[in-house]
Length: 158
Ligand code: SME
Image (tube, rainbow, N blue to C red; front, top):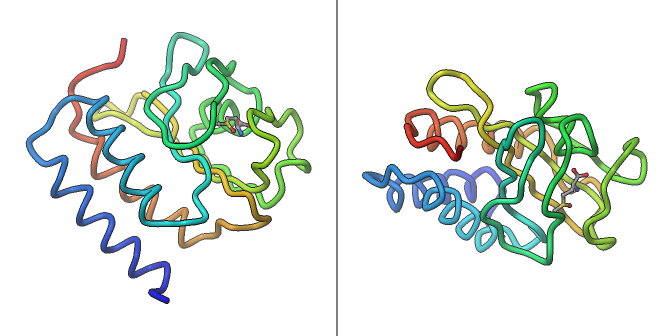
């Protein structure tokens, strides 16, 4: 089986190639959700929550039904949004205030997404049905991908 780093290198190339020249934020997010979800079979829910005032509202995703809105500071996504820091959670049941959109999700990583002015525009949420799926390699590559794909986005969701 191809190792995780090689998969990330390959999928990063695909995402950049497909989104090159496309400025629309939703198109980029939808494309990234699809390609990440196709590349990694343990990505059970892969998608974006977009900043909408003091809340997050669900954006493009692949997976089972997600909650529509999450307040800043609530759950893993809300904590990533409030702190601007990636959240790596081995078991969501140990995370205070975790929001169970789907009880099958067990571990997750949430990466903040910033625009070119360094303002938070969204978070990328990836959930897995297994415990401790995500590690520093996922953090490194997912932060790098969202940094490269959204840093030059000029279209704000609001
Ligand atoms: N797990 C997230 C909620 C979103 S979904 O799982 C799709 C959280 O606690 O923030």
